[in-house]
Length: 201
Image (cartoon, rainbow, N blue to C red; front, side):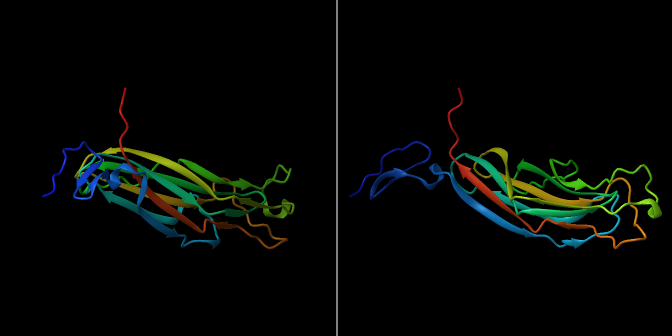
């Protein structure tokens, strides 16, 4: 006859003895890979044009409270801007937590941006007066951690992510040389981490 000992949260008592439940260990509970659908040459974009759009959710089906964080990993990026234009890739995200079918609002605020502006020292932006100028900007891969907070058993979280390209400001196509504007966001990976909730002072 085997006896099970009363245990606290994050612990197991089985016929094999006492041990830590999986919910005690920080771990990846879900991941998603998002690919860009708009990489390459771009044209006038006074308003942001979506390149990468996706979401990830996780339901706490464990019997324990879990501290949840989402890691957003972004691939190396590159843009090509031409005098006198600006090319920017915006990153934004939003999240919600609570009831099982919680849904995050669509991201409307930019948290990060990557890009550049080519501006040759000339006062005029008329096509016939533009001097040749082209800017190539490459950035390394980057990551950001988004703390979601504590999810009680039976609660869920939902995070939406959007990367978009924009060409704000002056947009002039010179007549004497070939125009070139490009943006490459490539991909983004979303990872949901969960672990035990520490004691609060």
